[in-house]
Length: 334
Image 1 (cartoon, rainbow, N blue to C red):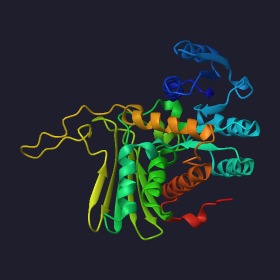
Image 2 (image 1 turned 45 degrees about the vertical axis):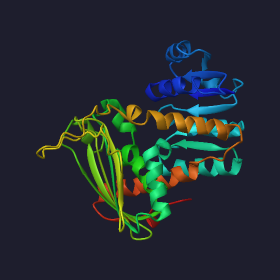
Image 3 (image 1 turned 180 degrees about the horizontal axis):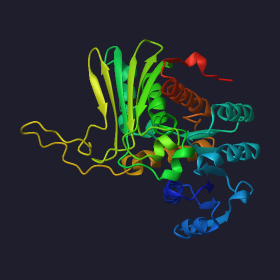
Image 4 (image 1 turned 60 degrees about the horizontal axis):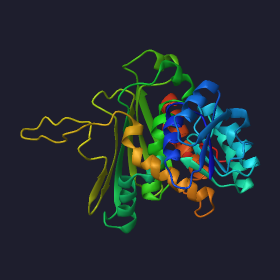
């Protein structure tokens, strides 16, 4: 199978290496707006070639992986489904809610399989948490605590096009809350602040945020996120039930230091970034995408899932800026 890869930056190069190592991939065809970067990534792989990103869809590939910056996602998705190419697309589908809704319509009308890159759905811990909830072993679930903390902030130029902290970081938590519980968010209330670099407020963003989500069965989900967590990259989920509780990310790599007497765990090493933390999950999701592209499996994370997670993040963003609770009925679906 020949897999096209649009975008050869940090996550794109990471995906390129993974794709080249998977059984069933005969060639990786790399395209990037920077031709020299595409050539560099392609030359580092055992069976790959570089093409102009504009020619990628028509380059004889069997499926496409989109890992460009956000503005490239929607145009490439439209071109791929128009050509009938099964497509993997990193989140988000598009930069705005309106464009996301339009892309969802185009994809669903096309019938072409599209898999959105919410890699936490392929992480062993999150899948076990989902199984624990669905089996009933936790009793009734009343509270979830979801945390996403980056070890260091992004480059200043990234922030103005990121969509804001909830759309960029917490959207993964918004998706996995739905994935683990099987329930939808009906109301949010969000807050945020900035104690770090000035480029966050200059871009209309915050560097730390929190949100209370209410689900359609009354479950509460507490989200927290920050761009400054120098102890290490920290992504966790706690699921609290009437009969038991489980935690994802509670292992030796936990980026917290206990100050209790006689406690010497976690012992580390900590994770440095999301690619480090979710390396096995990224491999698992791309492996599954090959099954989607070959027609052996349905898409496990559809554009509709991406829209619902984006709607929750959008509601959090509105709540942050307007200082009020926001019902999901206020956020359009069509």
